[in-house]
Amino acid sequence: DGYFSKWINLQEEGLKEIRESFSEVPVFTLMLLNKELATEAILLEAAEQIFGETDPAAVLFKDTIFEVKKEDDGYDFILNIPFAEKSDMDMSQKGSELMIQIKNEKRCFTLPDVLRNKTVQSARYEAGKLLIKFA
Image 1: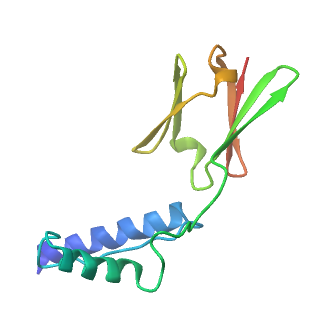
Image 2: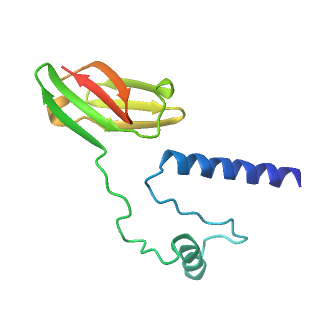
């Protein structure tokens, strides 16, 4: 019927965007259940559907989120953001916090000690990395 087919399409579009945005990260899903996740038996059933043969305690993805490099003119704070478009990004600094917004997603980073009294001088995005110059 109309409502549920629209809902299914929205869910499929959302999952497609998630898979594209986090291409290297395993994505697990759970089909809509007709009962609440309220008992151990139902939780175990859901876990089986979500993880199957995968060990849920295993480390399934490991990557460096950011790195800091000392340069002659200050520091480079390099964020791995492989799924972003430059036109969708916004960034601001408030004291020792750096806020990055990409579309409707916002992340707040507490800056490492070496950058706490520094300010953003410039930023550029290339090859899936956001390079932010601090001085």
